Length: 383
Ligand SMILES: O=C(O)CCC(=O)C(=O)O
Ligand SMILES: [Fe+2]
Image (cartoon, rainbow, N blue to C red; front, side):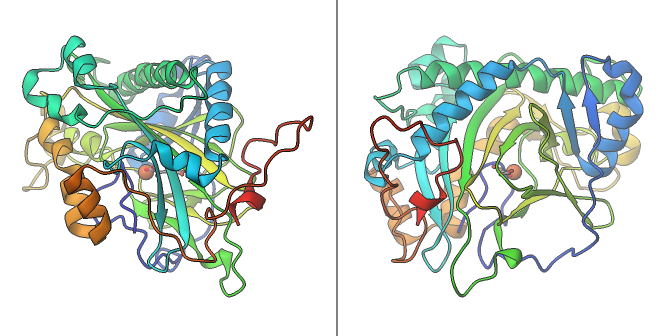
């Protein structure tokens, strides 16, 4: 049972199925090239943000070598033997490594999560006020055998945060507003999640009918998402409830609008509702950086969006209040007793998996002298 880390409540993996919203599978996500000058693409940006809450960007300024370096390191980490990865488990559902089985114990998703700061002292040094420091009480978990991962991950998060702020500037301009409209505050909040989905190849189940991550919208302002794999598993919902496949465009990043952007705009910019289908012949990975305004910022419909904000739909919310209770809320709604106990006792949590679950056995060890496996092609090891 998974609550996606960037999701609102209710985005559980429980009972995953592809039943709802079975409209035509189209591919209507706009692709914007920031190098070509976003000013000439404001119509595309407006359509993408008003109708879908999703835009693919190229020419985005996040260095390709940084993206591939992070991807390579994460692929390596996630293909390690399970007992080695378990060393990186945390009591906190959104720190370090964790496997997320469905109700029958079959692995649906494996994650490596990184917070913006390694520890309370780092957050304090960066100017996070004392009253919010508890957010970082559970430190990041880094593998000892890849000391470069930390710097790569932090570099990538910083590049995505810059992109997020740039995109918000363009989103404002596409509405005819100044690019500084969405004020992110002194220390914009962000975090990183790498999702690794197994292939779904059990004798009794049809992968074509399986969702590995249920429909949800992220709770961020925007999320910057990169996807890797050998099939297009991510879909974004359109205004008519139809599902739009997000094509894998090498080097492109998907920018998803989250609930906070919708609240800021009184509903004018819809949240990008998305879900992940099973498929492919290799594990699928995605790397998400969830970007929020600074914790002290209060998000409420801005004056320019007042005409859209009729009714009680968007009460003011401080970002701190929006993020502080995510773990408690998740555990109250979906937590299994052993998960709740691990959180309460401060012990790292490693989920039980069913006998036949993917992700249970050690991956096949590489023989010396053989080239490294292609990232994402560790499906055999997941059985
Ligand atoms: O795997 C994906 O493409 C989407 C992941 C996602 O929605 C999330 O982590 O919130
Ligand atoms: Fe998401």
